[in-house]
Length: 495
Image (cartoon, rainbow, N blue to C red; front, side, top):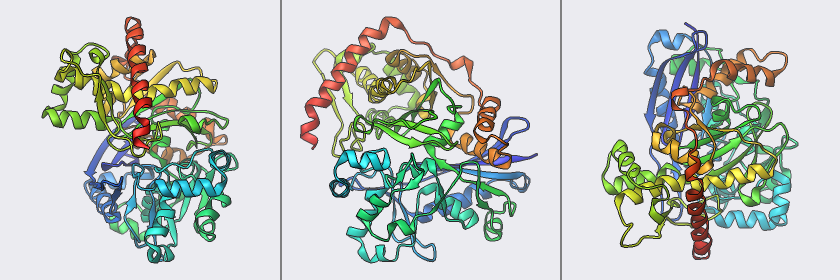
């Protein structure tokens, strides 16, 4: 047995799966949950030692034979986080996460110093948003100056796991493009943005490696600690969206991937730079050598989980109740901004339920409205992609939302596109595993090699393919318009 290990470092857990590429099967997988430190000011953080403990626990859960089978390792990590380390590799502060919105003042400062939003977009193909890494670095400098003075390594979460495994300090274009410190067109760090934060910041940033190159090789120390083979390659890895693009086969034109997890994302592949940041379409690089225009919302399954807990329902019971309501929830509109929001850019946004009357105020309608809201938040993305010349033929759905038959149908009906589900549900871990396999043998034309790999290994579960009901098109267009009207009306209250 020969396997590649795909590590998925999610917000809520770390998971390692072992994929036997010869028989095209996941032979083992283990997951360890993660906690989140929250604050009313928008703080969302984690302790760095939690990552160390979880990585160790996952590897030790495999048998000796399973660990010995690992030929290469790839890592997916939640984007935009800031892992600040000193010269010895020790944490200087907690890891600030992608959904941390406590850095609005830092965003304003950087944007003004850069010459305004258009100047920022020219530099990094994105607006300066609280979720990104750059304002987190300035936040540390302003709030913990003594810790900042000791700063030596600036890492994203997946880069930190690479560091633990092979001791190498490097980055790759995909995850780097989500820092708001990186010019995705020139594929270099932006000295202009770095200098606004600190004149020495540019010199602290890691070397950029190509997606098909190894980040490094498992060190003797890591091999002994995790009980895995010494010297095997660790691929560059990437952000969770970049790895999910590989894990769903979104490495060429034609489909969009929608990820429905804690956050919601909609992204597609392009071989040329694409972005519309002022309207929510971020200009990221992917982790194959191309580009990954992406729309992100900070609240997806958050809305349904909060509502489900309020009603004290199990997941399937929640689905069953929501299925009893009519499409459009009889006029109830759920605004799911429990964590603030990125698209639209409302870091101080709050959740709300609108349109309630004496006749529609039922658990069924509220439950369905919560499910519909997550899709409304991403529907704006299909319009933005169309403006960029994308002709979308299908949506590939991944994340927890894809497991729900009702949610698949709601997505197909709101988007009016067929929805397909990859056989391997863990798209980020699968993408990381395939990047590790690619790293073993990149071939003469690396990007074409990755396209062949996804064609061979990413299979679609035809039994879950869901087609849109054209009879529901007008209902959902009206409901979506109401959703946008409520967002527009309430925006001044959150600014």
